[in-house]
Length: 201
Image 1 (spheres, one colour):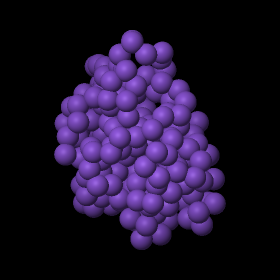
Image 2 (spheres, helix red, strand yellow):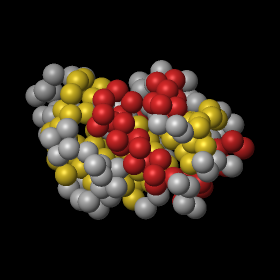
Image 3 (cartoon, rainbow, N blue to C red):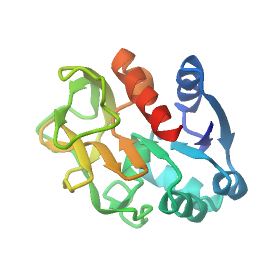
Image 4 (cartoon, one colour):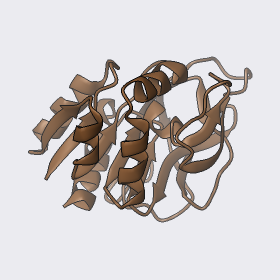
């Protein structure tokens, strides 16, 4: 199976590609609605500002085929902003709507902690997770963000604590997402990507 990466001009696409290649997975970049609509599996990397990502999705008319693909069961993994985009909206760009595949709003992390949250942190398990199978309980993952989904739902598989608990892993049927960067998280991140590829098979 070939993994289709949505190319929204963010900087971590190439590093995600290399991580998938090291795991023996084929990947292709997609910037057109047709490519997204015909994908066998989808991955949305994201670095930067919520507004920039959403505007690219809308300007390239990728929103509808992406949402349609996820709703019909195409395996999906969102990374960082790719997780935040799944929610209704974000305080980082309050005039824009997210993909509205998950209820709730992405909020700024509390100013009690140094922002952005950049560096290594551990997860707190909330529900059984297919993405985290085989990952050590005390494993560290690499984060780089100032906004996060605070409100937890039944799809919340794991959270992280940085000033407050925030959603770190989402799993809902075929739809998965992580707030951390698996492509920068060493062996633990490799295992997360390996687990996603297993879900795609």
